[in-house]
Image (tube, rainbow, N blue to C red; front, side, top):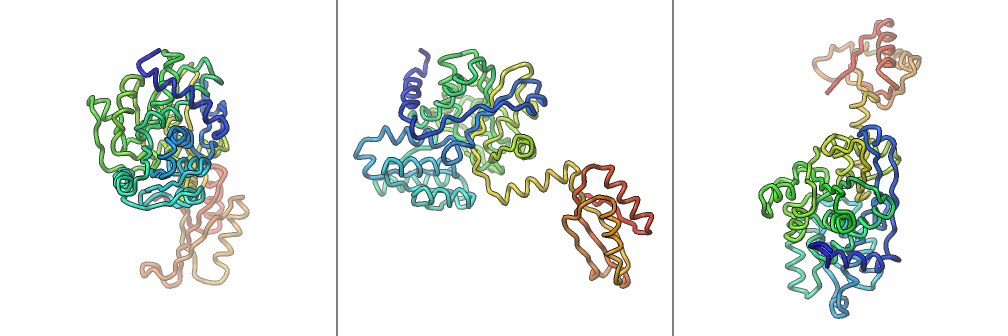
Length: 407
């Protein structure tokens, strides 16, 4: 047995305790991401876990280990969203009162889901660490049992059951990539995997602007990072835990980072190609494979998709931006005579070209536009660049001067 054999023993116990509480999520082979990376890629679908993320594992196991007195007074936790839902769900299942402190700017969907699972939600601070401090203070005042989201052996043990499931389904795995916020998930998985197969490479993946674990490992001590300007709210943590830092430093093959656009492009591809909905924090591990941060050529690689609790308005923005980036949506502008029938003339040509109009706007009030003309802007859905060129040529042949407009 290794250095963390006591936690490994708890992981084995957690697998039994959680048998009727959590799902055993499947590994899904992705031909798309395998082709892109040159490896054999499997997706660990924790976005399909109860409450929409892996967090229910650690929360449920930690609460199962509380004394009857601790369970009676209730628990309090801090979370950006997923730990909140895991604690709320598990507490309700166990008949325990729960209070969750969440940052003010937490996604509405996560706040409502947490309340729906039965927790009392308190909004405090602008970042997870602010909520964490307030939760600790409240625990001292009320006597509630504070449940840390990652720096706790029982929480780590619950998350480690994912590692056991990966080895059960893919015993010849070579590489595993895991999202990192505070480090509880990657700690549990690395202990579970390394105890059985020490040669497996386990990597942590952080958002580039919230890379506290990477900074800590590079300097050899727990470090704070500021700013946390990232769409990956689920892993926007200023500093890792002391315990999770120590485990990561000892067991991980490395910690890499991914940029915001790399994350959203992976998110979009997952949605379009694999029909899988994942939140930004949940797909950073796969983004690291896709964008070459971890070399998995000719290897069996698992990416843990840690959560799927995404804000729908944010998801729609990601889709819109990616469609424009890929040239499947375009914006064209042109000038037309401001008289009856002019717009119809344009639209008839567009329709004839086979291009679909998503949105159309006409401006006749700009003082720089001649009084007998109007500016027309159209957002179009197009199959490819050839269709756009064909449409513009047809408009030009009708004496209509339109151009593709790029922001």
